[in-house]
Length: 181
Image (cartoon, rainbow, N blue to C red):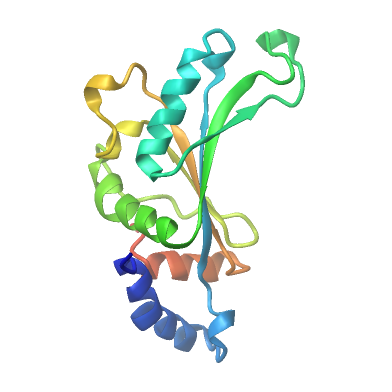
């Protein structure tokens, strides 16, 4: 299998530029992507289990990897939820699939968002991970518009080894993330 174009670009261009910008001498200390986690909460699945199948199938199409069904840890009577009931699905991408997905997210999916002005810069946590909320799954070309029964949002968490917001933002900006000005 061929090396993803973004991974190749990272190794040849982006990592050396980041190392000189941040004053790092060791290549292993340079900021890099570690994993991307996609999480889709499907609260309606407590009433109808078939909704979960459709959601996990869509997540599988988007990522090219089978989605894992997440179950409730606690019972909450107000939400008619019992422990063990399916409440969402998630996929963790690493390696080449992670770079392929990130490339498609930045170059194809995000520009398809209506009235897109860039992603917010305040969604970093303290250790350099970035979480992006997407309102619908139709921005991905893998999802067929005619087969979608309901709009479902998802969270995309990009985990890095950067250690701080500034270093992670420099990495993601170099990888092509369209941040707001």
